Length: 328
Image (cartoon, rainbow, N blue to C red):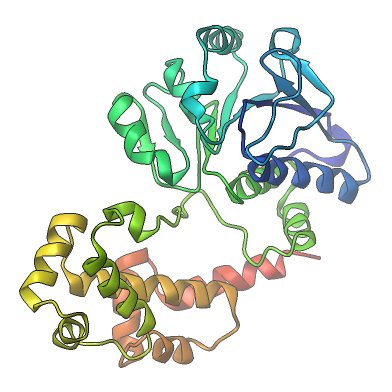
């Protein structure tokens, strides 16, 4: 962490490709602006970059300006490639060449939303851990086997910074701000944006079940919906089978085939994820969380929680309390 006396201006470039995700870019820019405001100094600056210097049109039809052409950009502290929909169409041979030149100059590179695709296609994520929006995870794994694709919210591997879309860039920037300005400033930034919890790089993207198994498997989707609707009082597999019109054996086969997990384990992990949300985002007593998530006793809850997350519920609650206490 830099002291106030040694603070220097940090400059980020945001390379917006055609049809980029505006929400992803905004969630990256705004924490930087707020950090400047909170420390009463311009410790961050940013520039909007496009391949040709003309404002790129976001997926929602808007554009950001002023812009600078990529070839005219001086070396920033990090250059983030900002993607969105139809990212393959936005990546040209000329763009890949320019990105490789920045890498040759040892400029740290990042990707927001689907921007990581451009870096992967340029060969700049080979032998690196990286992430991308959940819609593109499977395709990226298939197309770029040398990239260590992760389903994390964001990933930092040496001088590569990649993250999912939506609000995930906010979490990445809070992490970078924390490393530079300290936890108090990053916490204050998060409070300004009504963020209940600062998520870490160990947090996973939420990948909708429909994306994991496809829309055609309505039976499995209905089973999962019933489980989610009955967290506090978990249904037996026999009751779920009767409610969905499937046999117990059919449900077991579907879970094994499409999710490679038995129904009981899937249900347990769903309840544990809900418990973690409650521990981190509410002040509910652990006993109430135990009941709300369908566990019969605190010892059983603690054992399952430790097995899933590596620490007991009490430690998770302490993490939440320490984060809140770190703010002045």
